[in-house]
Image (cartoon, helix red, strand yellow):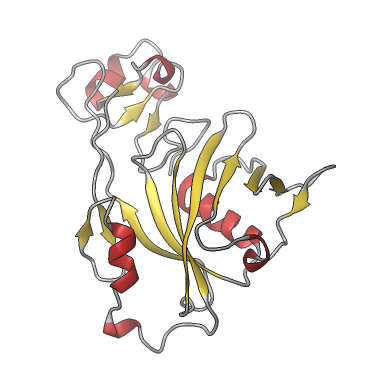
Length: 217
């Protein structure tokens, strides 16, 4: 299955920007209508991508004093949540879990106590059918975010995937059982005729969790 690496949409100005240029674009993008609507305090500019599916990526801003749990909630809502699975960040060898056990720390830790510009860290959602993300702290921004919330700055355009069966039409359905061997991305017509049945398929969505567990976007 081949996915096209797509550009992304800057949600501050609406411009389409390439994946490799978006961080630089966001560092200078400052729409006039955004002034006066931001909460006080600095925020971290974070780049997020699927660890094994780099065509899916986000750029976000998170208040520096916000807890890791707030970032966890945003990632779940935007990209991941399906069945209330557990999750965890790993930062500099320390694991911060949604349900901390022995040797783990709570996600109540504030971002500015565990992150610094240039730092790379990771995240896992669901410890069975795991979706792994790679994150990087691009910078510490002087400005805050609207209402102190985690803010989506930019997001990839949905990759276009051709149906594995007919090789012609765009895939709109995913068979979780067959996707592991590269045969599960199907157009609607091929999904109906698929041996596993269309009822077993999940919708194609713009997320690294597409086709996993019960995720429907």
